[in-house]
Amino acid sequence: MRNFLFAFCLLLFFNSCQNRNTDGAASYTSALTTEVVGRFAPLNDNERFAYALEGAWDADGVFMRNLIMFAVRDNNINDISELFIWESVSDSRGVQFASDFRTVFFVQWRNQRPGEPFADHHAFHSLFMANGATGKIKRLPVRVTDTLRVAKDGRLVAFIDPWLRTATGERTGLWDLERANIFVFDIETESMTQLTWRVSSPITGGWNLVRYGNIFVISGDLEGGYHAAAAELNPSTMELITLWDRTNREMPYPIDRIPSLPSHFFDDVGQLTDDDLRQSFDPNVRLWWR
Image 1 (tube, rainbow, N blue to C red):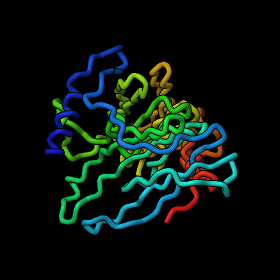
Image 2 (image 1 turned 30 degrees about the vertical axis):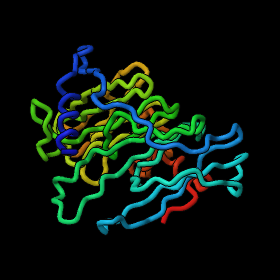
Image 3 (image 1 turned 90 degrees about the horizontal axis):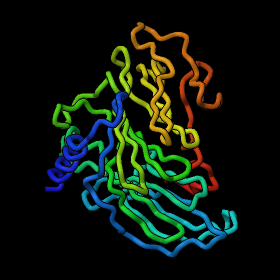
Image 4 (image 1 turned 45 degrees about the vertical axis):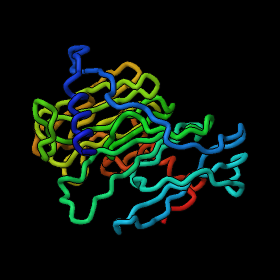
């Protein structure tokens, strides 16, 4: 029943789109609703968040990581107090902060059950927001993939749906290697905008999404992580601009660094190795991971 409801909501998302302009952007209202699912002691004015991830096993014997959230006083990492614990949180890209570290977003990972075929392990997961000022934990009305990126001001969430879908929005089980379906969710208005970025020829690696400030950058990668194409999305205007596209060549050399991003985001051969998500791995923010 739960899987049916999710599929139904997803179909509502795709079927309720109204074309907004000629570049393929579409906007619609979420079929889900925001829900307050937890509370904790609100942060004082001199406090911010820090977190830890602790490994555990659930009742079915599936390994997961629990999120432990702390309040840090006067930016002194030795003066902390525990706020709450949340079970089964994604440890790859699943904990992200607004720039003031008083709002945190985290992804609840749907663990694969024993004996469950991998194809049935949905790539979409619940997204939560903990607001330090109010002490409320909300389940946001959106389901996200692990390409998730939260804008630095904490207003927008972006992610890529990597699946090739039918005309009615059903997932085929194959990766869409010709276009990136990019979704931007506005937290205040609870509205979703979808943009589609097509490349000249199919990629062989996958789609990658990074954040720099409030700008999102999408790359279409070859196997090994080399960028065959890159585009920039400014969420404030919803403009999606192709920076370059060499997918119609056998090997897209020379590899360009993406001009929107700082040089330290790249290694010596131009592969993208970093983005603003690195703030979540600062030892003054992530206390431990085990």
